[in-house]
Length: 306
Length: 306
Image (cartoon, rainbow over all chains, first blue to last red; front, top):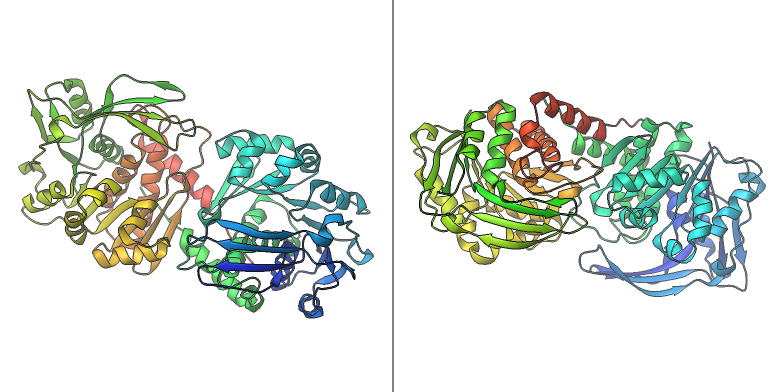
């Protein structure tokens, strides 16, 4: 199946305790597209960049088989730019600069070449933009995956709820799940979020892994324990990309497939944090990914005979 | 194998958002002894109580086959008493009262009936007391498991380090692992703690589960996601008790057995939090425990075919 991704393609400038970068390639859709290409899944990006966006970054995507027909280039506009500084624990960060630029008036256009995508991943954008994408699809994709964040809960909750009602899989972090549901217990939170629409609720817990809820069943995975996290930027997007691409590859949306997809997403995300930006992810082969999945299996497998 | 437990036998008074108790049965060794009895493992407690400690509580322990020869009763003394109030999230609490009482001058005495214990669980006490227990054993137990906390790192680090050097398995939480090692990354922290002595390092992460480190290998388990945590008191002790009792039952200390023991400890701990104090744990049968272990298996098992 084809995977359609709607999200940012951007510049990031990152500072960590290990060093800093100039403006480098970033954006949720970028990480998602690269993750899909590792899986060999045909994907296409719907986004917008400015005239300042280098051709070589576009070539990087097309070179990996990512369809960029849906990336609009606003010649006299500037690309979205985010700059941030991570604290010593790599778990928290300060945003130094956010220049929304061409993303401010982003009006997503679905190219004909991607109208037949059966998996749609709506990256973290204004819920009204996410809704407009769904309306512009000639037929509803079989699987709609929603990434969102607390910012939209604070500023556009009503619209977000309309979007959530049309969603099959929602992916949020633990604090966002609590905010969205008003429940502290994540089990209760997931129940309330199910009632809002999504059949599958993914709750991300950063270094503590993730939970998947579906139809009264729960699946839990740890994050891969790493000696060093070099740069967390894009880890969440890589996770979402690996997850969605696995569903598209398997052409199946059952609970068992969803569980596997969570592992694949986590495995790919564990590479992203090893270098700045997309640097590590672009080196990763399918064999690397399979090796990391095996490590997850070793990390979590047990037998108990009482 | 026999399990010898050194730790508090005490009164607790607990307040949670769901209610409050009068003085009820508490103490680390109490939870550990009950956990062992569910596993059918012969255990004995070394502790001290005051003349105010009800015979019915002692009977509860002996009725479950727990050897209490090592529980000294100081007739004119008062039993250790702790009172606390949990916050709404059940993840943090305020201590209202700590009356150390007879535990202040606790001089543990190992009864002859427990000198042949091959597994020793040193509950969270002053490291000098823990060390004295090891010295009083006629032969070193095959497996020494240490529970400790940040309080002893703050007040008795040098003695604690001597104790840690004599330990096979150390069980601490993530913040304590960071404090003890000076490393933020838990993988690095575990390496440094290995160098201090223990072959096995357990890092507990509360609602996020636990990690087991041994010889470059890592095992990760989530906590059982629960709809409601009623009272967390004793969960950590139950975990340690289930863990140690499983090792004693299996008479094996390999990595695979340690992994299973972690699951058994977590399964039992997930019962403890369902009611006040020891109330739920005393109802739990071996069949209940096996059912909860199966739930852990369902929670964590996956297959990935790329």
